Amino acid sequence: MDLFDKCYNFKEAQEIRQLGLYPYFQPISSEQDTEVIINNRKILMLGSNSYLGLTVHPKVKKAAIDAIEKYGTGCAGSRFLNGTLDIHEELEERLAAFVNKGNALLFSTGFQANLGAIAGLVGKGEYVILDKSDHASIVDGSRLSYGEVKRFVHNDMNSLKKVLESIDKDAGKLIVVDGVYSMDGDIANLPEMVKLKKQYNARLMVDDAHSFGVLGKNGRGTANHFGLEDEVDIIMGTFSKSFASLGGFIAADKEVIDYLRHFARSVIFSASITPASTAAVLAALDIMENEPELIDKLWANTGRMRKGVVDMGYDIGTSCTPIIPLIVGDNGTVLKMRRMLFDEGLFVNPVLSPAVPPNKALIRLSLMATHTFEQIDFALDKLYKVGKALGVI
Ligand code: PMP
Image 1 (cartoon, protein in one colour):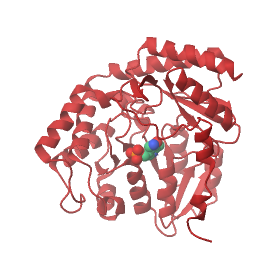
Image 2: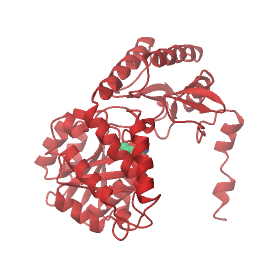
Image 3: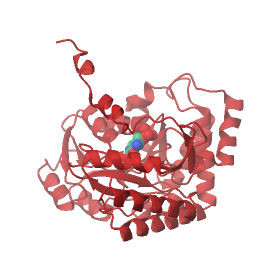
Image 4: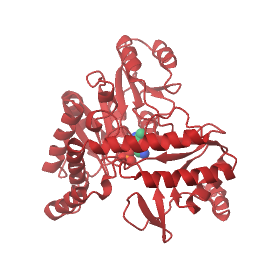
């Protein structure tokens, strides 16, 4: 067998392309606002994670441009050596204060933050305990660690308790969950999890990729939303969503962060986040702290969309955030529906099995603060028309 046989034999993507249903890697040729240009057509964006719409905010764009003028385009080295800028440290201080932790550490992506933090912290003879719906970067970070990986049923606290009971009570344990789950749009049951982590002497890490800018005071995330900032030991965030940039961070006690500065391999052996990306996050933070009405608008938009689709008869599962899944059924129907919605002028994300259980394939809608009610009503019209045509509603 040749190593590349699997590549030459991989035909699924090509077959879906030939049917005109391939949904991935679609190039956008305009500003990434609520409306974008794809194939020379104006499309309403309902698939972006820029929940507050800040990637096109003039203050955020200007901060990035000014940072390039001052520092140049890249850092040409890791934080550990030549790649630390004063604005990296400023951002770490701002983020630590934002989430009420002792310190924070920047990474070049959120994916790298999870890899570096989990693999850096969980060693031989220790355990990392994951929700079955955790993000791929949490799964990969756990596999990279020398610890043993255990999993519990999605957001099921009895299942978590059973896992904790089954583990040596003196061993180090890290529970890692998403604050808001990116497929289901539901929120982790932090209050119960905190009780369990105390009972079983575990540490708790929350990936707030989809929670910053969405939950908590000024978008401070899930721990703040539940009033549990002191009880959640590690908060992880990405800059690729509400923070309108690229990069990620971990916030925790200052000793934990200092340890990670020296043991998180994805910090030490990877170039630091660019000046433009760093400055964009600082500007986005300013806006989040000073314009809370944006978050109110995000929730108003979410409420309007959710009511609209539920009234039509769509199944949105356990969603209670701006991520609204429309659970449709088999992969084929979802691919067809995605294409029909695109032809009607809507960009939505398909989520297929095996990313979700068989027959639970879904169309995922993500709301932004900058959507107008007119845009949402336009989308609802199209979702009704296509849902009826396919017999989904
Ligand atoms: N965690 C979660 C829950 C995510 O959804 C994502 C991004 N899709 C990441 C981590 C990775 O973040 P980044 O895009 O910054 O690599």
